[in-house]
Length: 298
Ligand code: FES
Image (cartoon, rainbow, N blue to C red; front, side):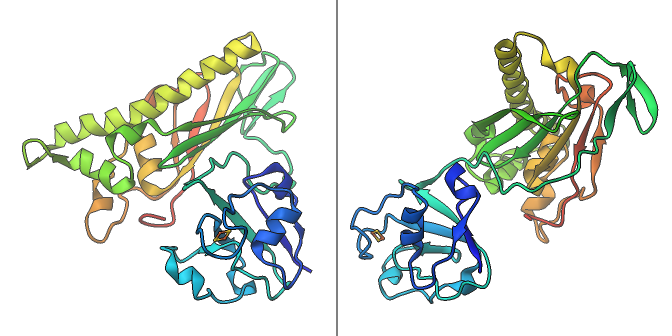
């Protein structure tokens, strides 16, 4: 028996049992999740669009009514997508009012706590080596740099608790809505119809990197104010994920190759940087780790 999950919503993260024969819309209603279904589920309004992230094979093929709407490969109308098999789980994202909600939470699973930075007596150690005095807390950041949204968790690395979650619009959006327009920004001087030279490119890469780092630093200050103490001193470990353009811009790496055939990043391997190298205001003894990439635009 499979389950259907709606990870954008607290109520949907545990999942509900699949009921073969019911539509996705009926499952959404069973889970008490709100969705815009203006026509009441007769396939006329096109408002109940969902993205099927996993389990498309459990559904009926798209209906004639769905062909009236510009749906992408993974999208269906919730009122037309009927579950015909219950063997495998289905993961569904709801597109409401023309805009996906910012995803702050994912499917959670139990992971043994094994941080790189740990306490040993009165010291903070990394790989068995003392790096700092223990000040009562060891925190980490888990950052997802999305093209549209930057989301990060502040995590207590001793207890595994998530202390705060921040989700803000990626400020690079004012330089272009998508990755291609941001790559174009670092390649081309549009006003003067010319390609930028290497120095000019570096400045623009730094500019795009800085707006994101500044936004995270500002958010950390806001959390410090709320908590009544400077939390940056406790943050030792930062893990960053993102698509190749977002991840490499975060680390100030040239992404122009991603705009040119064969669209491959110049740096795919994992990255470790010191805080001062990218300007992130965390403990100076800490590190920033960028997870490796699997390919261009992936
Ligand atoms: S509820 Fe209107 S098309 Fe599905």
